[in-house]
Length: 107
Figure (cartoon, one colour):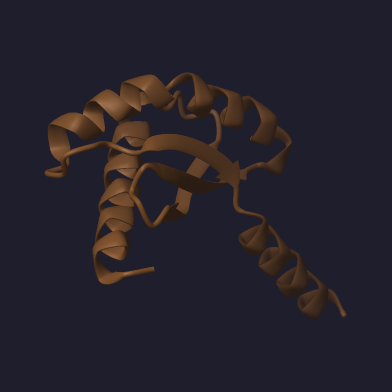
């Protein structure tokens, strides 16, 4: 990623965390782990982790329902011409890291 893309991705990550912190119903812990932006800045994927993991599907659906509102929030807060289309996904890298940590503790 270029420096500009990295900066935009970090801003989206921070603003998404603020927005979801305000909108979340607090039934689970939702963490924004990272964000990636396409080279043309037209698409962004926000990666999240959810605890407890049994609530992942519900939280993922909740965040997907809120993407339109999030995009409106980003329009007001970001100083770029076009706001990327947003997608959200569970951060599998973080999930795998946690599993490895657990195995190392128990093994």
